[in-house]
Image (cartoon, rainbow, N blue to C red):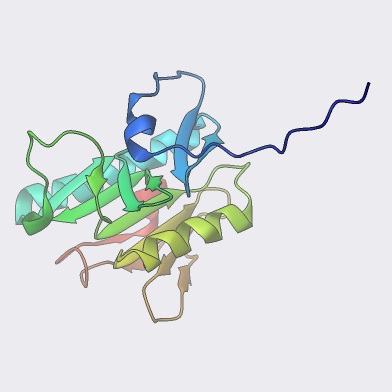
Length: 188
């Protein structure tokens, strides 16, 4: 007797279900249009650059104010199906900081999202992430490539720009008032 094959249906995850998933020390996840996307653990160089960049931003904001910087925070960018992205580093202006009592992912986009590339990142996945951020209101996406020691900037409705020289100045003052640093400061 032949069995009729049942059509496979895809199970989409909501942001609320995603929040309740148990922590996994071996992998990180993002939720993209209801689908879990597994990401490899960060390499040493990746983690070092994330911390260096976060320290530069945090130090600047401590002195000058204007917002906060955070790492590995989930931002719910889209609903039905849900998309939750977790930039390596995120900046939020002071007027957009969620209440400390707020539970769950931040609803909406950060003002700036910083991504540090890993060796296994596929260009199409990185481009999709950049597009998700820009389409959902992020004012600035910064992609840092540790291998090439370069920094690429993406803004809505403007052409992207890439800095390659360690002495070039990364000027983010249009989004993070007064913030400037050299590429060398990020990669040292």
